[in-house]
Length: 401
Image (cartoon, rainbow, N blue to C red; front, side):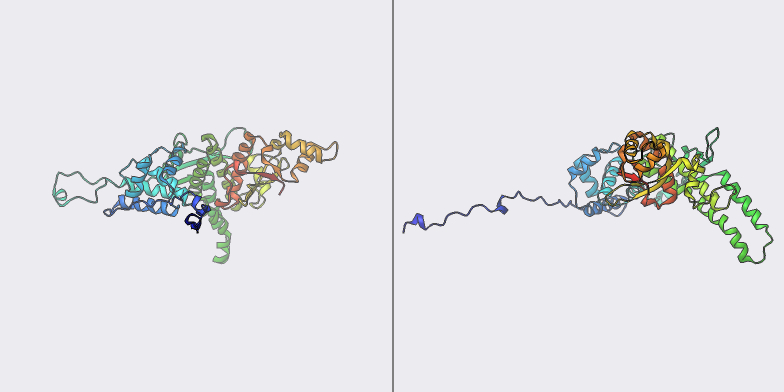
């Protein structure tokens, strides 16, 4: 037999052989560090990267560079230094890395960035004076304790001819002159002082306490609505801090954020006064009347709509002015096709909203106006915070509930 014929023919390359090599996520070195804030920063960020699936350093660099709200802009080698050793690096660079890693693994970005900032500020802080320093009578005295960082925001009823029961506040103690605060720059502890609210609670508690009521249990029931409303009013500050952060993260403008805060505060204050039985206020469960009362509309001029973000992301319901929707040519065109001939504009609007309509039928400026002036203020008073759709751009469809 011919030797050449006895040789086996080479096998064709398999599909597996043609595959490009798979790059496994790279695990960074984790050198030993002395106990202290630098190691704490390193451990925090290192663990976040592991939890996020070890994103490539180049990818982290791109994410940071693509977010124009971040002051830091570390390159790949600096990012490596920060994650592997906790620095040394600029504070803004460390905070930028902390933010993108927190987002990558679904952690609370504000808590992570706040924690990193606290640790970074303690890098150069001495743990205590040495024995020689403590015995030196000429050494500098200890610094005084930190001042109370509580910001007091005062809100008063809106003056002028504006209808409704709206409040406006001076947000400078919380936000600064403009909303250019960094992610950790907003003051954590905020107290919102509403003199009208405080005065009412004080007077009403005194009035009810003077009732000649037999039995302590009955008296407690009489005082209970006012006491509960007063307790809820003390949480306004933290709630509005959280709202300001969410609005800033959603890229609302300075003016829009202040509008959202003012109108949300108005809805909450009116709800508190209503729940404490203030005369002349709507029942807190009558949301349509409360919206009309707060925003200064006749109830018949508002329409309740449901707004859906789609893909299981939830939605919200709110009362909004019909006049804004009546100015939507596309929406009214649909209503004209569906409604009987010679129907009124209001009838055509309701007919169009009986089925889900594309939110883009409402112009972009009107979308944002609806969201900042009407939907968000009601949603934050009506739903748990995490259930609120903060960005108007997330809404896909709307219609009658």
